[in-house]
Length: 186
Image (cartoon, rainbow, N blue to C red):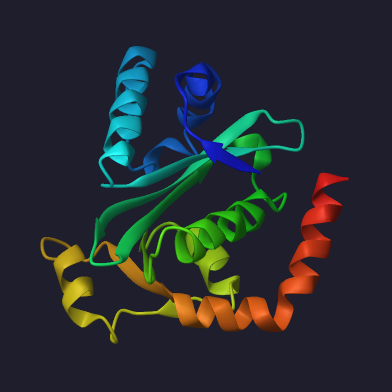
């Protein structure tokens, strides 16, 4: 469901990213296909330097439908950024992509904490985050990070995914997750 980024998928991803219900919530915005191609090349190079992790989200047939990223990696923590094309909203791809990405981040790449900053006006993403049993609303518990995110204006809610809470969830419910992802693939 996820794979390393490459330039071949840029056209399909750019078309989906520019949809008016997706574009406002994309962190790496591009106003033209050439700019998106350039940003993708920069992203691939930044990953090679260890500054971020970026994957393409795929549907059952291997077609690109969005991206999932860990930005601003510092001291075993980073910020999650995800977007999925409008035709794929509400179909379960977000959860499956996050599970695969978290497995890689926590168990292969040594990440300890994933933060999510979600715009307070982005109700869809807040609801999706709050459905995940391993997500903690961190506006108060990580007040210094929350205050830094909102230093100019009160825009974001802060969420945290600690590796140990995610691991506990997988230990308790891992088999159910495998079954649901197999159903999505069927």
